[in-house]
Length: 281
Image (cartoon, rainbow, N blue to C red):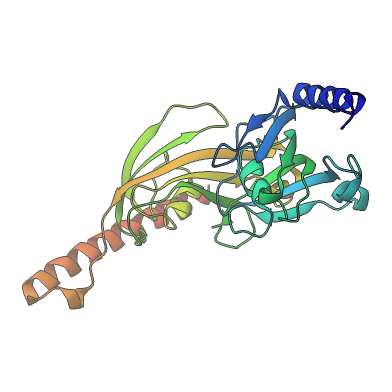
């Protein structure tokens, strides 16, 4: 290498170092294999969780080499947003890691070394905009109106059922409200517990911590309009495990438990009749 070539190489390295100084390292091993820089801050603190479906636009370019800066793929050019599921390996590692750190409305640049891209020796750069992150649909009608994202998994495999006593802690993030702890009968929520949370808790395990997004109309789940959604944090602290009569040995215990279930059912029906009567006025 001539002195002139070395000088050019040093100058290029300084330019690259200056460009990369504002990037943060997201790589699991700290090897700078995934770099990120925020170009536009998001309008919400909501970030994707494992299992969420995200909706993005992206522009992919080559980084370094003879084709540096050349676009090789663009959802914007196709005018078609791209969807994928966080954490299931359907995209390159840099995307699984990088997009999971984004906030709704955020635009960022991701630089992926070959080990975190396609392992073909090429380093790639992506400009990504996050439009939406959608948790699993837990609505009764499967219409996407209630979606749950698991932030922390629970300790067991059981879910509360109607009639079980459950203790929950929830907070309305949209209104910046304080945490509320309530013990209630699943399926018969008090006025302090939104009906949508009662629906969601039946899909949770003990000690699970989830984000619940309630959409006010069927279209807002894909429009990214924050004003049309209500976001909650919900923790299921504990719940009463439902017994089965066949698992109770003595007849007297079976009858006692049957009477408990009967009383709960009667109380539930009384509440339902009261609500029906009130709705008639």
